[in-house]
Amino acid sequence: MNNNVSGIAAAQKGVKKSGFLGRVIFLQEMVKRWPFYLMLLPGLLYILIFNYFPMFGAVIAFKDYNPVKGVWGSEWIGFKNFEFFFKSDAAWRVTFNTIFYNLVILVLMTVLSVLFAILLQETGSKVRTGIYKSVMLLPFFLSWVVGEYLVYALLNPDQGLVNGIRASFGLDAINWYSEPVYWRFIMPLAYLLKQIGYTSVIYVAAITGISSDYYEAAEIDGASKWQKAKHITIPLLMPVVFIMLLLSLGKIFNGGLGDWGAFYNLPRESGILFSTTDVIDTYVFRSLRTVNDIGMSSAVGLYQAVVGLILVLISNYLVKKYDSDSSLF
Amino acid sequence: MVKSLKLKGEGVISKLLINLMFIVYSAMCLIPVLLVLSISLTNEKSLLTDGYHLFPKEFSLIGYQYAFSGTTSILNAYKITILVTAVGSILHLLVTSMMSYAISRNEVRYRNQVAFLVFFTILFNGGLAPYYILVTKYLHLKDSLLILIIALLVSPVHVLIMRNFFKALPDSIIESARIDGSGEFMTYFRIVLPLSTPVLATIGLFISIAYWNDWFTSALFIENNKLYTLQYLLQSLMTNIQYLMSNEQASKTIEKSIGMLPGESARMAATMLSIGPIILMYPVLQRYFVKGLTLGAVKA
Image (tube, rainbow over all chains, first blue to last red; front, side, top):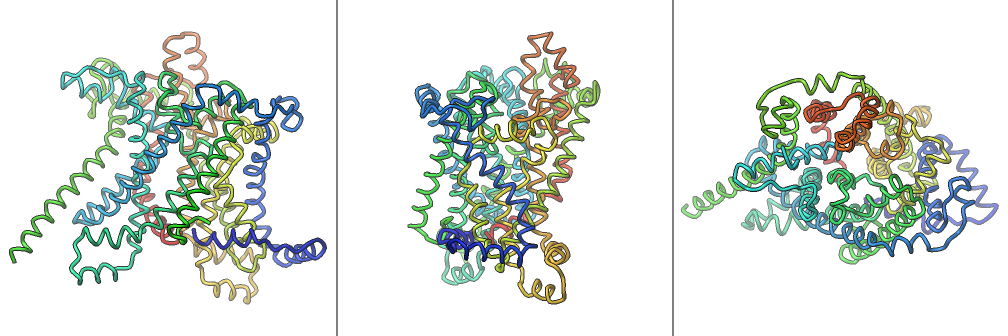
């Protein structure tokens, strides 16, 4: 990822040749290297249309969107859409939930996947390590819709496996789908189960990349396994950990439900559970699709995107201070 | 001597604990899937009276019969999903790799500016609502097969992974192809792509799983039940069921549109059918995936 550094630095400096000269250079380049520019044209067009147009479209957050008048024709209403959102009780709820789950998941995910990655080398048999890795990766390949069914099979209040087991111990059945408090644990657990296999395998890959010279040298000095992990593996793993953290931080407030399918699907859109399951993404999606409130939806979406960007910039700054090679840019 | 024996003993105990931990964790990953498999193979009545079990109490294939009967909604969803996954993955690989290759070449003057444009979209986007309006109002892609393919066509992260891979290819190969009179496109298709199978396989795997599992695009843009993908069919089976049970009129309408009013075992059978292909291909997928990740992590 470090290669991007040069890219962005150069782009920022920009080759600012003004006016006529700039145009001549541009045309020369296009004529001389046309096959390359033809190659990147489809992807570039796609990104401009599907990623950059919506960025300009974000102005509808400040408009009273009217489908007939379109994005540019609709009336400006200033911060009204934001006002509605921040005055509703949903604002605090979804912001808190988003931050809460992300913090819990980021911390647990990082600690557990690094731990798993290190311990996977210590099972004593390559075959067993391989089997564990395969099984741990399985949930990563399943969609959150399938996840909804898996969780439902476990937690269905009448027939579900968990209540069945509770019954055999003489415990009362719990109605999981109407008790918000349990979802504070269910959500992170489900999310971690799906993702940890994947992050662990990435860390295993990074560990395999560490030169064995270090370990041999440490062995000669009589280092224990714990000492080797603490003084060699973990420090050398940190750059990868930082990159993974920064990338997932970006996703927190970055809109698009890709990763947040868990919060949409697992609680089965149950309104009773919103107090502990509603996050910004599910809120935006709902106000767009169910409530059909485009103004509010885009205001919240913009709020999310801006906070997300600030968050990534701050953490990138902090990482850079700590270890300049590990930052994204 | 005594010391080394003691150390060996500790090693055995810690190994035992480590293995135990992974066995428990593996069980947590596997049990839900096994449970759904078992429900899909159990007699509907037994499910109601005995609850769900890890092994079917009264074996029955009726769930699968049900899933395939009625109209052919599941088969249709399969067709749509396979089509979208196959076409989407190939196009994604083509567009992404061409773009990545162009911005990986040093002689391309504006490569860094383009890379910045791509990279910035990872950090910031306009949000869901403008995207929704763009697709529905300006591009008129609502309820079309095309949007299912287009939605995942380019991924900035994949562009950057591929760019890093192409950058590591030895320059001399491309130079010598050029000297031999090969055009840039020829070099790209005949030399660069064949040399890049590891990264193509990994990204191809990622993206085909993403297409296969994509429920979100359908949830946003698809209303026509002929265009339901497997994931979206599953999702509507789940969200509709309680509503259906309390409303006879609605259940008739839904029965018409999705072809069945499924019991538990039928819905779980549909779930198994939707993850079946992934599980069947899993050994192959997994090996490539780990190889590709190793490569990606070291390069990244």
